[in-house]
Image 1 (cartoon, rainbow, N blue to C red):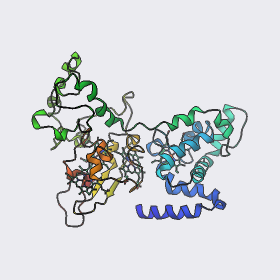
Image 2 (cartoon, protein in one colour):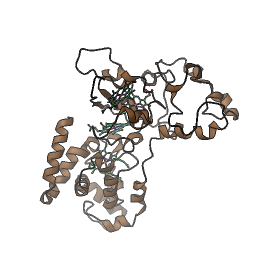
Image 3 (spheres, rainbow, N blue to C red):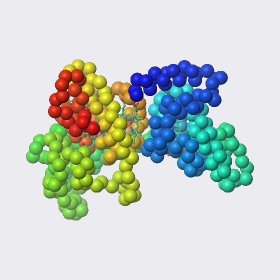
Image 4 (cartoon, helix red, strand yellow):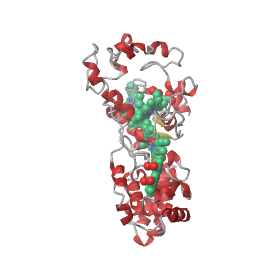
Length: 341
Ligand code: HEC
Ligand code: HEC
Ligand code: HEC
Ligand code: HEC
């Protein structure tokens, strides 16, 4: 899929560059890029041809939708669908194409809202300008991986109170890999994360007790969290405010070929999207396009790319085979979970 995809994107790019084909290009761009998400409603994307999905958005005006498509939104729309090389005009044409697929529904909704009707497909910059807040909201940088931000921010106030060796501000201060066995999973008042002066801290269940019934791993806090969730031993709430929210699990493996003798890296979307929102990684940490991100072990060790989480809130870099799970060609070696899936 990947290679043919890329070729077709290039081909489409060449063809679409001719303004004569502007009308055609919207559909092509949609098919090549946008349909990944907008055909099925992946991650909550408004679906092609689904009036209910589009009408409330179209009501904000087409300029607002162009803006979202060009710069992305915090709720999962990547800027230009992750293909930053697309000319603005083609992205807009793809928006037009999707709006065209729900023309009638949008028209009906609009007629209801206000008597003045016009085809939603047509540009209405004036109307959109009246709603300046929308594009502005979109411009706000997507929250950079809340998961990782929490630990990074936490040590600061604590370090002054808790007598631990954790030094605030150090990128690896939360790296469990670096903790000697005797310092792992300390009770909350001693862990350097919770405030020991707060009574609530002492009421918390110590991790060693809490983790007792969970599947084990060899690193970090010694719990295999992927299995724990797979075996339904834990059932974490996906959204802090909404107990019924369900994750959008996406089963898409990305293989990153590694130069040299190390096995290739398999990045599994499934295990990640069971915990995380698309916007935790896209687009702040990774552009959603296979091969578009330069990832190296050095950057991971520095706490970037995969290292934003791995070594901090997910299994650490010591577990080479969890990531380097795809044998190059030689016969099968005992492959870790990720490769099998
Ligand atoms: C990786 C998935 C993905 C791809 C690829 C993608 N989108 Fe989206 N898109 C989304 C999601 C998720 C939303 C809903 C986000 C929201 O509500 O803010 C969305 C919303 C939108 C919206 C409505 C934004 C709004 O303000 O209501 C437009 C317009 C849009 N996408 C255009 C496009 C175009 C054009 C392309 C192709 C060039 C594209 N998208 C590719 C995921 C994607
Ligand atoms: C933990 C981080 C993470 C999360 C969460 C995540 N992704 Fe990704 N995604 C990646 C990485 C890494 C790549 C590969 C980038 C590369 O190869 O340079 C990728 C690639 C992609 C691609 C490109 C696929 C291709 O073949 O080109 C799409 C589309 C995508 N992600 C959509 C999503 C959607 C939709 C969600 C939420 C349901 C999501 N991602 C959640 C990390 C993540
Ligand atoms: C936003 C945080 C985040 C980022 C970025 C991230 N991961 Fe993860 N990853 C997790 C979490 C959380 C888990 C599940 C908990 C665990 O296994 O420690 C996980 C699990 C995994 C697993 C599953 C192992 C299994 O047991 O099935 C693999 C493999 C993996 N990550 C590889 C990667 C690679 C490779 C990258 C970079 C391309 C990456 N991750 C980037 C948070 C992240
Ligand atoms: C969290 C996932 C993860 C873990 C754990 C991990 N790696 Fe990597 N490794 C990667 C990714 C991603 C790349 C980049 C692949 C690429 O070029 O796209 C990489 C690349 C490499 C490379 C190629 C050179 C470079 O820096 O890009 C070597 C060698 C390597 N890893 C060795 C190791 C060893 C040894 C371990 C265990 C001590 C390890 N890795 C653990 C994800 C991981």
